[in-house]
Amino acid sequence: MKYAYYPGCSSHSTARDMRESASAVARALGIELVELDGWSCCGATAAHQTDRVLAASLPAANLLLAQRMGLDTVVTCAACYSRMKAANHEVSSSPDMQKKVADAVGQPYDGSVAVRHLIEVLLEDVGIPKLKKSLVRSLNGLKVASYYGCLLVRPHDVTGFDDAENPASLDRLVEAMGGNSVDWPCKVDCCGGGLNLTRTDVVVKLSGSIIDMAAAAGADCIAVACPMCQASLDLRQNDMKRSTGKDYRMPIVYITQLLGLCLDLKPQELGLNRLMVSPDVVLQAVSAKG
Amino acid sequence: MTIVISKKRRMAGLRPLVEEMSGVKLGACYQCRKCSAGCPVAGTAGSAPSEIIRRLHLGAGDELLQSGLVWMCLSCETCYGRCPMQINFPAVIDALRGLSVEKGIKAPRGNMPLFNRMFLENVRIFGRSYDLSMIAGYKLGSGKIMDDAEKFPAMLRKGKMAVLPPSGADKKAVRRIFENTGGVKGKTK
Image (cartoon, rainbow over all chains, first blue to last red; front, side):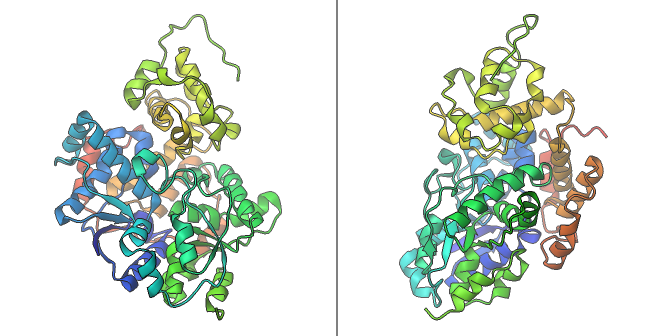
C-alpha cells in the first residue's frame, strides 16, 4: 500500500496533531505515504472565492506531481480533499477549463489522478477485518459522536465520499475500535469554519450547537477528520462558554488519534498533548481493562 | 421575503454575468426553497439562497451584492447537495463575490475580502499558507487586533501555530499560476 501524500498547509501549523497521528497510524498499519516533493497550497476557500481558474490550477499543480509518481493521492485534510476533487471535476468536465488550467500551470492535466482521504484508504484498502487484527487496545465502549462536516461529503457528485446525509465511515471505524458510535443528527452540519477569523460569532453559534447536540446524545468526545472542524470545535469552546455561560468540556479528537491509541501508540506521538480541551476521558477509556 | 424591484432598471441585471462566471443556469430553479431550509447562515445573514436566485431572475443589479449571504455563505454546499435541480448555488455566490470585489463594493462586517487577499498573498509568496503572517495582515487591516489574543500563548505553546514561514513548496510553480490567473484580486492598497 503506497500512496502519494499531500499533507496540506495546516499540517504544519494548526493541525500538526492531524499530521502526527496520520503518519503514526499509517506507519503502524504498513501504509506507505510518500510526501509529494514541492507540494503547494490547494488554495482553500480564498482561491475559489476569488477566481475559478486559480482555484482549479493550484490543486492541479499538486496532482500533476502525484501523476508523475504514478500513485493515488492521499490527503488527511477534508478541505484539501474537497479542493482537489473539485479541481478534478472542473478540469474533466470542461475542455475550456482544462485549457485554462493547462495554460496557468504550464502543463496539461486531465483531472484523472485519484484523490482519496485517509479514511477511505483505511476502510477500502486496509479494511475493517485487517484493521481489527492490528488493534491491541479498545475504546472500551467510549461514546463517540462521529462528525463529518461539509467538505468530505458535499457536493456528493464531486467527492463521492460515503453518503451525503448519513455517512457511516467514521462510525464504522469507531465501532471497530470497540467504541460506542452514538446516533446523532449533526454528522454533516457545518461548523462555520470558513468564518473562523472574520465572523467568529457565527462559528461560536454553529459549533456550539453541534457540541450541545453531541452532549445531548451522550457523547464523551467528538471524532473528526477535518482540521477546520477540529479548530472550530476545540478552540472555540471557551468562546462558547462566554456566549452561553455553559461549561463545555468536549474533547475533539482526530479519528487517527483514536486509532493510534488503539494501536498502542503514545499520546505524544499522536499530538494528543496539543488539544485545547483535555482528552483525558478518552485516554482513561483506552487504558481501562476491557 | 420581500423583494423590491426598481422600475427604472433594465431587466437583465447581473444574471447573465453571474451565469457566465459560474457556469450555472438559474432558469432551472423553481423556488422549492430546500436550499434556504438547509442553509446554516440564512437567518443570521438576513438573506437566503432561494431569495438570491429569485432576485437574479427578477433582474437584480448591483444592490444584490450588498446581501449578507454574499460574504457570509460558508460554502458548506448543503444547498447544492439538496437542490432537486442540481443548481450549484455556492458557485453563484463565488461569482457574486468576484463581482463585488471587481466593483469595489464596501467590505462587509468581518471583511472577508481582506482575509482572502491576505491568505492568497501569503500563498503567492511562500507557496503555502503562513497562518501567522496571514493573521497579522488581516488583524492590522481589519482593526481586529485583540480578537482571540488570549488564544495565542496556548496555541504557540502547544505547537498549534507555526512561527517560522513554511518551506519546501515549489514557489516558482505557484507564482506562475498566480501570474496566469485572476491571482490576488482587489490588490489596491
